[in-house]
Image: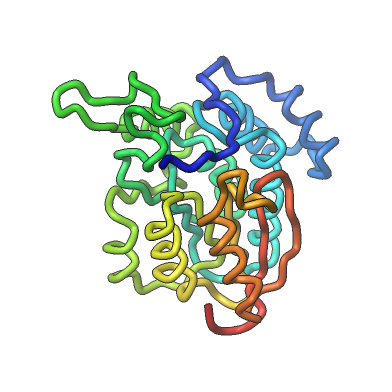
Length: 252
């Protein structure tokens, strides 16, 4: 039986909003737009994020940018990593903050789509299927999204299976965003494979966490519960289905 997940429908690409309109939206969201070159550049990237194809609502994306920016300001060592890039929308939100802070964002995805993106499921998008092999392939759209946002020097695509990459990863992370496979096994493997690499003081962000698991967010809710129950994390914010936790101790 297919589980039900309450997600916003995918946004199709649109023309990016003007820098002024996005700057105004950022100001109302608690992010200062000072008019200097860095703020203007961040507003340009965020306009691309808003317009990009994907599932992340604007308020959650803005929170993603806001908290990622705080990591950059706090000077916690290490690159940032997101699990589950799809067509690049969240990578633009995170990439805007990473570029401003002089950090690298690694965007990890096998680009074959999660369970709910496959044919017959509610979030399947047929135009993302490679007709030559009959499988999902979101990598070309992701690459174009990152190119159009001018983030190719900041966002590094990691194309592969999350557990395989985690097994050989050696670098401490300052930020970890989990929005990969939403089945029980892939969600817990993402958590177990990558959370040990998150530095003390770093941020763990988990998407599609629903307070009522009956709404369909069971595995993301489960790994959020693991983090909260571990004693190693303190929750600092919740916006929509996005949960933000700070690592305050060791363990997972």
